[in-house]
Image (tube, helix red, strand yellow):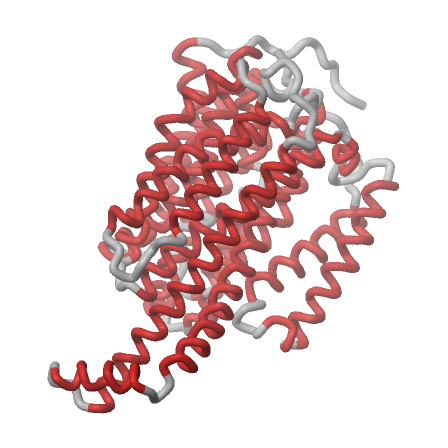
Length: 514
């Protein structure tokens, strides 16, 4: 039975509110940072542990699979044990897992600790979101969502910068050990500042079948997405089997969760028009955004010779702009229809992506940065407006489930984007390289290029190699341009989807206990 549920505690005020909000945001920042910080460090980790680059990708896969499974369970865990207790426990275990990752002595041990880190971190994002909403006064909830969205947007951009800098200057273990002092600080503040504000709990039975089906389909999906590219996708029988298992498991899971008396995940939330359509637009918009922040640094490093640190610094100004503008956008959100703010975000994203389609291989650092400044403006309105729309009219007792589902669908969309965009990038490069080869061939343009390089002291073999490298570089540029333009058109299409939602009520975002 549910425990007594009197009116919730009053919102926090003053210095206590500021300190708790900072600690909650810091916890979110740490967790999101760890989804990207290890990516650029994989070659360094692989070399240090004496394993191949292909095997080292399991460091990313292990975290993604475990996290993908645990995020949807957030609603059930928080209804069963309380939001404060679950969040603080999750943060403490995440800090411990980060320490264990930092002292890992082999690849198997590091993978095992990354599984633990991913599993225990599942409730951190939805938990911090729900707690931020609950500790702010009702007329300041847009500010709460602004703080949460700001950390969630900036962390994926900071991850490659920080990871690259640590890998270039220190031992790779510090990409994990850096979490320990901040985790201890944030965990202590949250526990002592929020333990008297615990939410009502219920003795809920464990949905064993639903949990097993969730593990099967999410695990299969995440492994398929992470390994698909290296396995040549559906030309590999293992990828085919994983896809079939994920599809069947998903259908069975949905049917079970909709018919079970005590489901692990409350899928009936999708009966709300704003929650369903808002999350679709939110996830697809995030997928396009995530694909672009992945491709640009990859192109800069592999084709233009940027280090991991400098490639990350190209994107840094967009994060700075988002941090500066988000508080102002939060003040406007209670006065302006969130659909208009979302429209500004998608139009800004479209402009930014289209500007990138004008990149050249001779562009300067600032040429690359300018479109990202425009992106920063969109970032400041995107998360806040989409969360306001998606969580509109969600009652307080269903908020943990809603935030868990919202975060899960967004994270899954990001996984799809990462897998699809890198494959599409390589395939478009191959297409453009073939076209360039056909155009140049062994005819006059090719001969002129070889002769020109010969005058610079290169022999025929060296000159041919230089021409080929230039052709490959141009092919990757054209492939990137294709993806940037497609991203712009997708952003315009999502602008239309946003207006299928109802106008959010009251302008204060989701409902929470006052």
